[in-house]
Image 1 (cartoon, rainbow over the protein chains, first blue to last red):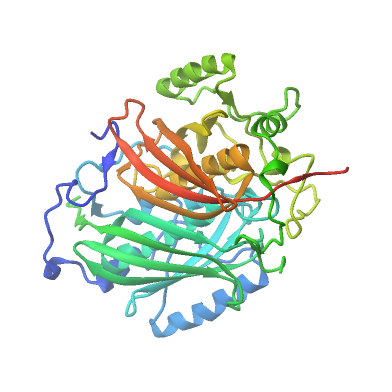
Image 2: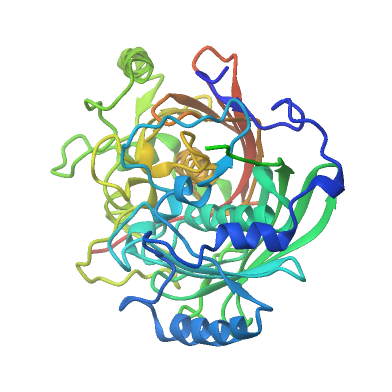
Length: 234
Length: 234
């Protein structure tokens, strides 16, 4: 099975149904996800490529983190760094080789060329904001971001939000309606919300728009499967 | 408008409704898309990173191109190369700077690290096959391709098919149901079909599965907007 793929449909991981009381709290998930000390490089920090809109909105949200209502999520090179200390479901045991693995949305290392983004998460309201600035390597129509690059950014923001809000791990479905193209080098603000958690699934929505909310780039919905990650004994 | 985005909804480009007789034929579109002589590098050619399944299926389809029933599509570094000689709709006039622009699905230049893919198109049946091998920079869950990387690959295959089958240019919607994860370094075969063309829209479907069709990775549908691209007078 692993050789060909790994099923993501509910139940096919043979994960037992998890009683709500056994779930990790959002606080515990956030603490595990946001280590106070780490040697890992955080890619979700301002650099010279960020446009003024992105920089100033980043500062606005950063100030909101002082009250802990919002949390700035770190973004490491690989999901392998994000899941340290967790035991993955059977069938998802990653090769332990030291190869150069990268999470897709951090695939381009040079600042400004590819994905520039930072995600802020609001634990109490189970929502996130992603500030996304597509670079020239994310082009579709000349001068504009590829629809697929926005789809991937939405999926990634859904994914991190689903994990922190309720141990949502795998995308079951993703539906996107595109409205306007995003100019390369400009800011798109993705507002993600967990709509409901039901039957081991998280139902989420996203609106991607300009900072002044005058231009909607796309709207989407996503469904994620909940899977409890055990702490590794190692 | 262009500063904030570019509308993709039908009619908002102010594109006149195009009578069917004025449309370019699929043959003309294919000829324009697949130049017999070019100095541009074609990235849709085998390299040492391709797995045996990808190589052998590529050879199978390449043989089918001899009868011209199937066409192997070239894949250049940027969509700007693919649209040479065409005039884009107003609002989509790309900056003419000589910056390093790349189409998103060719954003990672080192063979095997990112997207490896080749698309074959069947003009008579308005369908395509994309052979897709995700590399380690496209990771989501450890050892598996990020759902967003598959979403982008589907969008790109839809896009090229929609253009050649009926001048479909912009993604209006994309709906994906994920079934199984794709192991990094293995082959996913995307079968794309134009289901109908109606009211200036192309309705398309895609199934991504293993070569032996035993494992379905994802199913999707997409709707694309038709826009006639005038030939440039330059």
